[in-house]
Image (cartoon, rainbow over all chains, first blue to last red; front, side, top):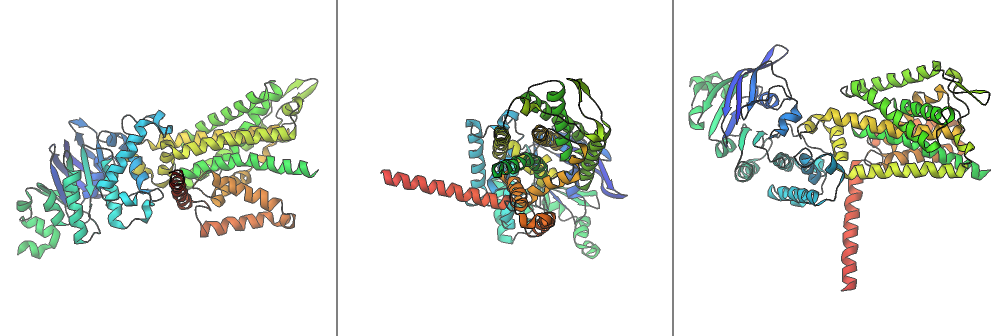
Length: 251
Length: 311
């Protein structure tokens, strides 16, 4: 599904990503972990075209999408959420999901203005279905900016799913959540978001990662230091060292 | 006499509303333009040339003015929409001043019935007499102004309910997130600038024909700044916002004679206070959203009551 080949990207002399190679197979759920500043979000930004690459390639289903405009990359079937929560705060919850459909096939310039067609009604019903699935049905008419943080994360998930993406990139979907909320989110992603698609999840919370991922990939200072089954990766001394400091790695 | 004054004030409110709506549309996509007066000017001159010099009928002159303004907006949009924030504002201001200075030296006159007609640099452009030649009364012209304003307003209200309108709001809130929904932000911004140019153009064409005389210095920065302020006062949540802004400024402040000398002071103070207390105006998005939800509940309640009364 996704193939990243010797990808590098630096910001003003600081290497955010260095020679990253990553292949994700169809239907795979890969966890991307690493300390803060290790380049996880940068990798998402480069894949989705927000940042241009310095060198290397990004291939989606075998096609080179390196440095294409973000909108074009997204239309090929990628959707993402954001670590720092990006929602349209001045729009309602329903509108926030509805807007994700704007560039879907079948929603052309003509449907941009016709608000009452049968197709449009069906799409709005789809939005309600998604809100129901993520547990936001009763907040449908609230302003998105007024939602508590866990609900905003659910809203982002619903918005990403509204595009029926083949590849879903989740950036700390449980960031800032309590353990109970995290467990709910993990179940929601596992049962509703993951089936039928490929997924990369950035997360620090190992219980969420272990609930979802068959494979872990670890970044540190922009380099990939481990890639494999979660149990094995988490035993590796350099992974422990990256997360917990040198002493932990030595012990 | 009082009737004439009322018609004059109402005509003014109507024409200024177009420039307010024009600036509002750009505020919705998140950009502050200090240059919407340029499109007002280009259309005032363009439509005046069409009717007074080429002898076109007035409706065609109005259409032509709006078209010329739209094309001018497209020319401005292509190099400037990639600029953000202050850079866009300065670019629009520079463009508008450029237009004004070009009009100061723009001379294009022809002889009609032994008299020279046409723009004559800083002396302006006299005798745009189409509505008087075709015996349109001040009141009838008022109806034309408000008829066109109603058409434009309905257009805005349809836009607000449509996906296209939502795209404009998305860009205004977070261009990167908009791009992440697979939408071409640059193309949609160009469309917004062109539409805003056309809307300002309609107002300019109406203005030229009402006053029969335009000169470059009318179209200075203050016209554009007022246009901007109306949206910021009235609110950015709906197209009614800028209209409320116009009504407050011209309808209220200008007609209260007691404060006539201090109008600009009061107006400036009002803008400053509102920017602090309600940064997105009286009818901001939250207020409009609240009203919409209440309205829907009210309708639902009435329908339920109606059914109960029937059954």
